[in-house]
Structure formats: C-alpha cells, structure tokens
Length: 381
Image (cartoon, rainbow, N blue to C red; front, side):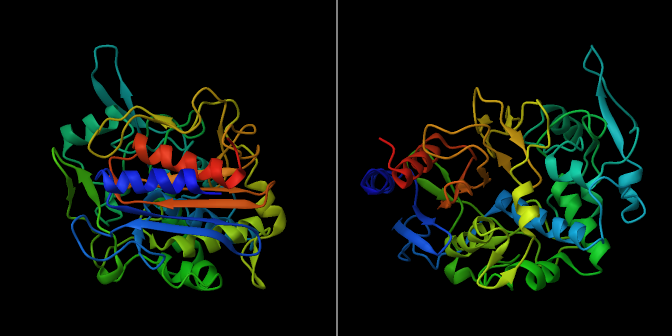
C-alpha cells in the first residue's frame, strides 16, 4: 500500500538527498503504519527508527496552542481580551513602517495583540526569514535573535497593527509567555503536566538525549553536511513557537488526541467543542500559509496550499477543501523548519507524520515525499 512512498524515501536516502526519515500513519485507535530509512546522521552508524528524536521546530506551535486553549476553557485566559496586564511588553509594541523611498521608521501600535491574534499569526509579528523588512531592520539595528532564549529578544516591531493582516511569525512564542503568566508555571512544566504527560509523550520536551537525536543537515556541494544546532541549556523563556524535540510516535499520539475529540486513552486534554473549533478558519479571506524567504539558508519560498484560499485556525493551517492527495476539507496541517511535516484529518479519522532533519525549510524533495505518503495513505493514484 505504501510502496510508492517507500521507494521514493529509499531513493532519497541512496542518492544522499537526505540522511534518513521516519513516517507514520495513525487513526483513532492507534498507529496503522510506520516506516524508517537511512541514518540519524550522515555518515554515522545509528539507523533512523521510531526511537529517533527530532527537533520538530514549528510543530511545537500546535501543542502550545492547545495549551493556551486549555487555559481559555478553564477561564484563566480569554481569546479576545487585553493581555498587557499579564505581559506588559504586549501593551507597548511598535509597528515598523516603510516609506516610499525605503526608509524604515517605528511608531506605537494602535493596541496590543489578543491571544486569538497571537495564535493565528494576525498579531503583526514576523520571523526574520519570512520578512525581508524585519530582517533588514534587525541587521540595521543589531536587534537580538528572537530564538536566543531571552524574553527581551521577542520584543520585535510588528509589520502591521494587530488584526490588520496575516504574517507568519513569533506570535506563538509570545503565547508561551502568556501561558506562563496565566498558569504560574514554566512552559516546560505546564506542557508536561497538562499535555505531554497525560498523553504519554515521554520523549517530547525542550531537550533531547544526544544519543537518540537526529542531526540537522544542509546539502553541500557533494554531500550532506551536519551543522551545529541547539538551544541555550537554561533559557529565560522556552520557545513555544519552535523549541520542542519529539519522536514521530509521540507526535502521533498528539494527533490521535485531536482525532478523538480532545481525549486519548481516557485522558481529556481539550473539550470536544474546542477540538472541533480548531477546523474553523479565523483569518477570513486573507491569504495565509505562505512567505517569500528573506533567509534562503533557513527557508525556501513557501506556500502550503498554492492557489487555494487556505486559512489559519487557532492551532494550525486549515485545508479549505478536499485536496488532491486525499485529505478532506477542514483537515489541519503544518510543519517544522528542519522539514518535518504532519496532517490530521478529523473527517477521515486519519493523521500522518514525516520527520527529516534538513535545512532549508520547504525542500521540494521532502515535500514530494510528504505528498507521496499522503497519497498512499488515502489510496490516491
């Protein structure tokens, strides 16, 4: 049933296009398919397998978003209320404006972003790789890197006033700070107590066992090159937008929770109504899920659903209609910077994960593997 995918993955490994990869398919009852090929690190002996730990980068966002929505359901947060009393920095943001002659200037934002806007990328925050304007501002001013583990590094200018556009950025990192303020717990402790612990995701966290970790690679002139990668060992703030490590089976358990309406193996994480609401587009008719790269070493140009009016929900991108590869309208999907990808399709009761560790994001060959996995999962020719 998965011969097409397995042949394509084997070829990608044999030709040195990727070091290796792990894939799985799950339904509401459990994992229905898994496959691994290659090695954890190019030239190394350790094989890729289901115990391999990956940096899942922006696949962290869905987990952190569910955490925020838990606090909304418990009455500790609201989606549309002011957040400045919890996180003062969000009440004193500035907007980056570009004049016709290219001159950049800053002005005070009209208001601070809401939790809904942080979760849906309508807050005005961006990433340096997704915005040439923000990247130029950072280079010009020497502003700190948003991923350096400090709270101050997250205080970046907005590209527009909250609610007035869509741009992929660090809003969910700020949502992590909001979670900490509302819960009184560090983000790692909150996730362990409320999501990863109850769901049995023992291999998911903000650190990883080096012996099980897949190396992050780039393609060199002749072969793959492993690059140094890691977060500060004791950051001031954990990255709710991209800091988690996980195995494919662990992330499959998170997706199965969504397939089961917020519950897995008797542990309820989110209400059934809350999970159903994740398939509701929050961004109107704005074009979402795309960017033109400003940092080609980190990301290619990207568009998750080119030509389709896809929208963003409270945790992920939402498919606007049935897709050629098999997914149903209302299915959820996104990925992580080192070319990890997932989908969860509540209508079909099916979810899929593909894990590699390769930069830059949006690699055409890995995306083709992901589509092959999806087509095989749905039996699409």
